[in-house]
Amino acid sequence: MREIVFDTETTGLNPQAGDKIVEIGAVELVNHVPSGRTFQVYINPEKEMSEEVIRVHGITNEFVKDKPVFAEIADDFLNFVGEDGILVAHNASFDMNFINTELMNVGKKTISNDRVVDTLIIARKKFPGSRVSLNDLCKRFNMDLSARVFHGALLDSQLLAEVYLELLGGKEPSLVLKEEEEEKKAVASSDEKEILSGRKEFHAPRLFEISAEELQAHDAFVSKMKNPLWLKEEKVSQNEEQVMQAAS
Image (cartoon, rainbow, N blue to C red; front, side, top):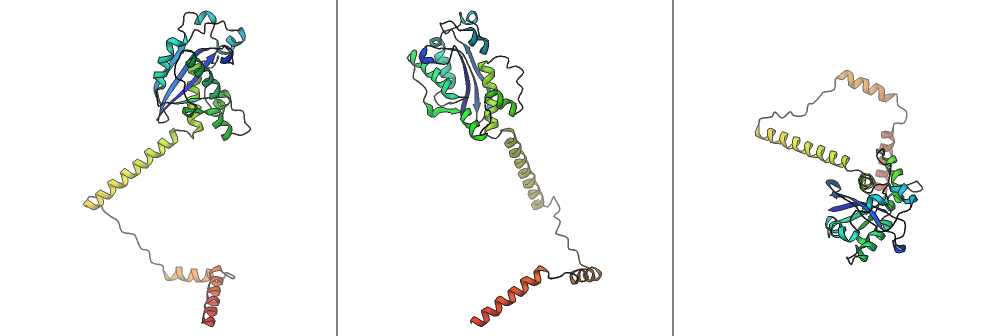
């Protein structure tokens, strides 16, 4: 199973009002394990960004003016996602709204919502009433945020990939348990083969006889007990037997 954890940086909040994507970052997971493949591209939005927006992601108008427009990178992005890739994003409706608007604007097929996983929804269900921004979740899972000076799409995708795996329960523990289980099976199988082949000595269970002194000590200890449970059960059993005999 392929999953593409991705993030976008934009010129604003509303693509229907003309806001555009200025960066896409993505990380590939295969069976919930990072494959090492990533995708990142800066995009010329063909419009000026406000200082307020630039303070969020640190991408300036000067920096993107010579970058490709979305039409030039659309196929590269779609090829990286693939036809079967599941897209994972935090507050996915925001990013997918931008992605699909940009795809429609250049005559490309949009991506259906049934291929999208929203980690914001997962986090809200897992931690009801708690703050579940990407920053908050990284802190909850003790992740290093020192490099997150700005909201960079690739960095945020890499952080989100780690958060996503933690929200699913974590990958490493299950791998360790599986390895330990396989090792135990291998050792047990090896021991069994050696016993059957005669190379490994099989030890029969050891029997220990109880001495007369131990029996006397046990009887003395039991005699001091008042209304022991097993005597009550014996009386109940006798009463049940008497009732059954009377009924017959």
